[in-house]
Image (tube, rainbow over all chains, first blue to last red; front, top):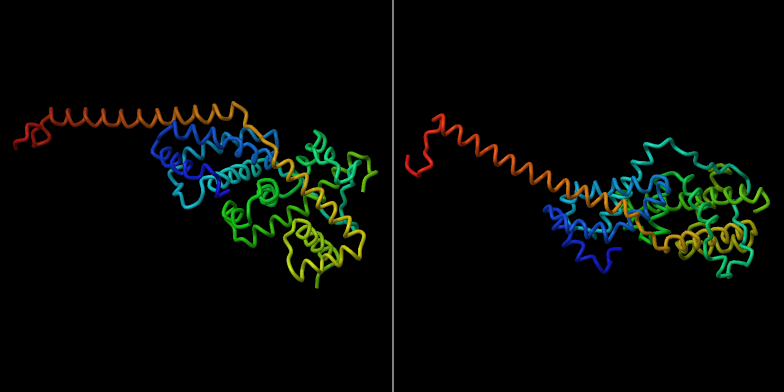
Length: 198
Length: 116
């Protein structure tokens, strides 16, 4: 993340944008709109991703003067994005977090062709829906940490910086998010296969 | 002392950390031993591995923001920049008129000619 090839350029563009240069801001939007939308999609879901992304860019333009270049621009952008998504989630009625009260461990069935099958590794539309639905049942902060770690590939130090928490808390949130995600995914899978899986 | 539920949750998180390659040394060996001995833990570790592959695969797929998002962000910035400039211009114009009016009424002693 911090070693992104466009790092130095981003810093220069952010500096220009902070002085009111709209062309520089436009370049930042074009360069990073995918990142913002992708993260919003994972945290707030497809129905809220567009509004959340727009809110992110409004906040970026309004607050870019506060970006001092102490971290990579992408780290700061991740932070603004996660904060906007968590605010959006707080406005919604909280979806039920899956409780883990069973005696058995949650399991995902082996794909038909086995784990080594490349076709099984490619995600079908149904599997994507399952993942998105399962993410919706993970507590928002834990979900954000899980997405940053296992979908965006950030280090724990970077996650801690983005979420504004100590490293240990970031690690704990990822761990809880991972466990909650597996439970939710196993239940989604169980529900779709009519209880024959697992 | 931890309840049975808390112990199960702890094991769930520990095996998740192992599957993600985040355990080292003695802790990793301890979990490996448990996975070797208990088929339910082995299935759990395999399930985690499958889930992590799915998350990684999905995370690596390119996602493009809808044009509407990009267009909206840029339009808002242009409007905001225009409003800022207009504010500065109107402010400066207002101050100039006020200065001129004050001078006209003779409320300010110094003249614009440089003399006193």
